[in-house]
Image (tube, rainbow, N blue to C red; front, side, top):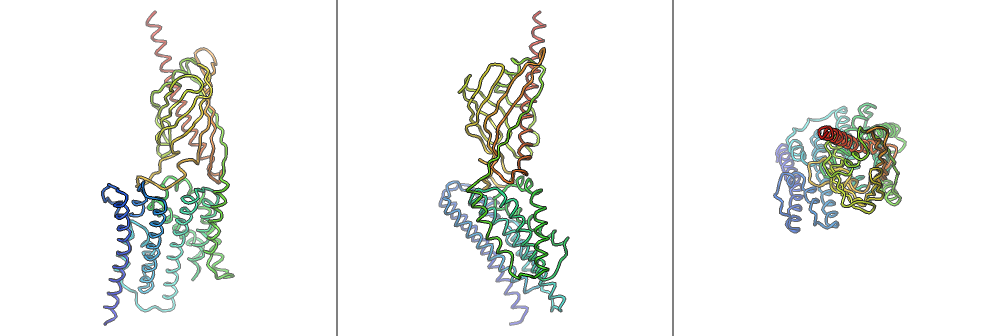
Length: 450
């Protein structure tokens, strides 16, 4: 058998094996749908991302979800193994080998990898280039895998959002990627950092594709993570150049689950107290009417709506006085509240008993497996005070209590306060507009009657 024919057969075998592995995931997804009576059509999501399509089944037991996820990880490992072997034989396609494990684009990457012609015999410089390309591909793949692993263990398994996920993980991604891409030859500081950021970007893309995270949350975490990734990349490059220890720094990943377990056992709980006020050209009686009205909030939601954050739409009181129920309609669901203080035309305070998700993830999927949308930002008591400050004028002050259960608090608290300020400011502005409009209407009515 000629060498060219043997090479063609190897490529055909590669295509057959990789496509069979990918198709097996669709088969598992189809079987799960049949078993748990899912009547959804076999849409594009089913064919391109069978894992996320399967995990969206509400009736799927958690143990089977874990088994299916483990199987898909095994498939990804086999795809990477086959693709890197082909890239080594042909001396090209290492970047495509990385993309072969990324849903949506993996079929195109596999096809291109199989079609790329082999490079000829290599001189010493060519061998060095090949090894460098392989190191870059392995570094990128390791960074992507580390991000997915960290989110799966920290967020999905332990429900921990803290220093381990937002600081330690980016640092290890940078160190691992920086070390591996420079393991054969020094690529320089600039290129190392670019590759580390690329690994973090591909890992973030994988989180979205696997329905483990939404786009907005990734964007919110990026200003914190990117500088840490760059620092880690510099450290990893330094380790590769020094060659004091030839052991792969991936061994340091073993410390992550322990950090996640500790953070899950002792979660952060930072109190946030806010107070805002607005002057309104209307009497306290008019302001009280607007405050207790069940009419929809007319002021545009602004930034919270663009970011997918929960924002109030209207509130409805069921009764009067202390103990009365208040139903708050939000963009993400309904909040049940209980009135704790009631002074007609002077004070209204209520405590939130249960609240809707803090945000709605921006994702191509109907369901995202991100625990942080519920229970990590809590609102306690909100108190409105109406104080007359002159003829036909009122100072409306609102105080609220919140709890933030995400670390590092110094980074996330300003973001939380910004969201609170946007929502409270919108509510105050709406009350002001309604109060002043009703006040003008009442004045005109009195003038007409005269």
